[in-house]
Length: 273
Image (cartoon, rainbow, N blue to C red; front, side):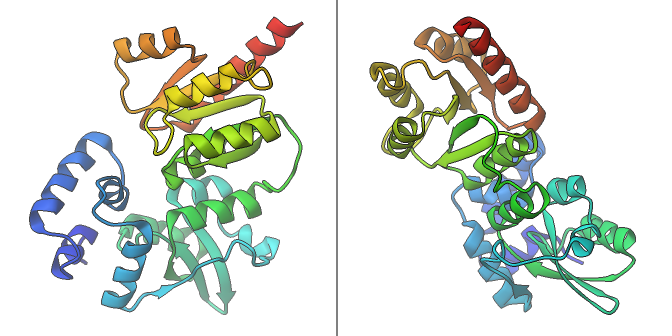
């Protein structure tokens, strides 16, 4: 079977030159090709799903997070596996299992699904965001309102969802915003215990958001962590001197995010005693 990139070129969705650039980035960043293409601005998640479904007759699914799934169905795929491979069980009938997946040409994942379940797996295309939302709600039960509220400000829905799942798993309540202005409104109304913000965003960037948060007496005590792809020592020093409580480099590593969040919240509690 051909690789996803070759199939996209054959379908005239991307050019050979674009594929070459994407594969070079993939080597250094160690991300899935679809994610790299999306971050390059070549294709959106929705466009990728629609193009693959039309070209190769795959079934697709949208808005499935609100459906009901029996526990025995969810138990077929361990939560850690579902999160790592971005897959979600949709329906079992006889010896067949329909699974939401982002890349049906990922042979390694398909083989693992067959081996884990012992069933014939039928791939159904969905966006990463929808799969992550379904995992968050149905595996991690993120609808619970307990725990400290944390605001995640990130214009990449995929990165925001990855951070949200990692924090929800630790018992935090997670709020999200896709730009600084929305984040400012949420911060004023919800008063989160902590804010994690990307540095580069539309309308209001991370530095502008920090200025606005610190200038308002209602929100000035909220610690803010910067999330950025610029991970040099100089960038870190600049962020800390500007007033950020901590600095998390991209690509995002969930364990690092959780560790930094716990550290900042612990320090905040000690300081306020």
